[in-house]
Length: 283
Image (tube, rainbow, N blue to C red; front, side, top):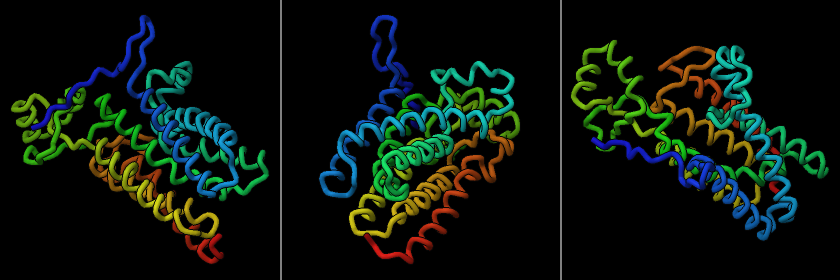
């Protein structure tokens, strides 16, 4: 049995200033976006310049932060935040939704494309392969924090992990099953899937490889964006079977989680767009 390493969530202490690992993972994701984006610009894959890429990133950062927070409020905990509206603005306490951040980024990209008088799909095709490694960095941040742990796993699973942070949740689950209670008494916590690492591999590394290879050849406008929607939606849908589900607006379900409900439209829209744009000639 593997015990979660219990990293200190604060990476650097500078007097009263504390720099958290999760924040550093965000910075790493943004840095990788610029690094890969400038590489693609040099390869002639975009109308952008390095200066415009910096501006584009600012639109994206605002979309991630504002959309991610609003997504957490509206999709996952509307009752709590509407009862404590001041906490909506306390982003340092955590609580960011990928799907909300994704919608926020789409709004930011639409505004940027309009300002530059370029095609929205041309822009999203360019950024799609740059996103997954940032997602991978975010999942490493989740793992360091010991948050968003997985569902209960068999203790025979070689990489099953004990998350001390989940003990309160383990106790609640253990009260409903004698088998779980016995496991809890034996190990002090329930063995769980390290689902953050599954998401790191699926949403991050695997999706990056697919998009980077797929976008390396001429494609019809919008097709790379469609593959991103399908790829992320499928990766998230599969990984949610191993992640302890969050309670969302549809309730707490181990059958179809909130993350899966939000991923289904991505898959459906992605397939529709892939078929629609597939009728056009590659650029």
